[in-house]
Image 1: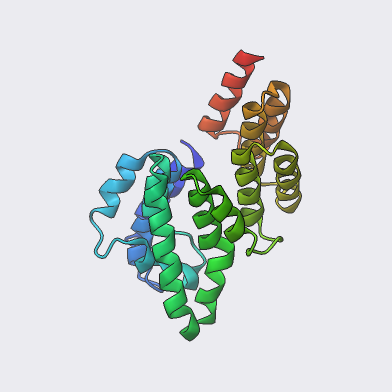
Image 2: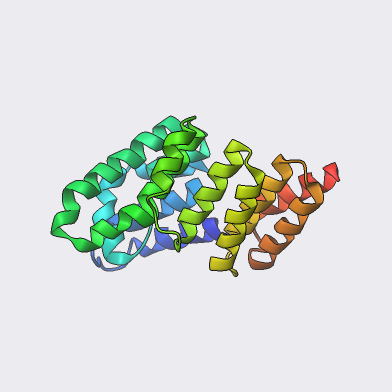
Length: 225
């Protein structure tokens, strides 16, 4: 069982616990998010369809209060490479935060370090790289997700030196997290550096040894070596 699968199972179990700051509604949304991140959008959709309302902005208040990251609609779209839909969802969340942040400073902090980086990533994936660069430049440089998105935008541009620099910074900020190392490996594979990709995948696997998609990516790289 992968970590996202275990997370989805645990969130499903937590639905029976007493409600805390909207946790009864947020738990299934978090389970759906975990499934989508684990490339199982069908399971995620089945959960989201049972929720009312089930749009991502409706989860943001509880996300802020509990420091969790339910955003199932965005990740379902990402898992199916429907980046225009992911972008539309991120923009809807950004607009919701703009409208509600004046009354809650905590909500105002979600945009720059979470929603806007995801919005920039979706913009770049959907083809608006210039717009993505403008948006991501407004996010803080000491934000792990923000720096990873900077690196991924550089990869889309095929600006390999910038991508190397930003992935190295992300790895510095989160040295025990696998995500930057995994994405760094994907970038090196895209530019044809197979041995370099394998090295980064190996680092990622040190911190996420049961990550099946990562292991498959390494195996595919080994076959090209």
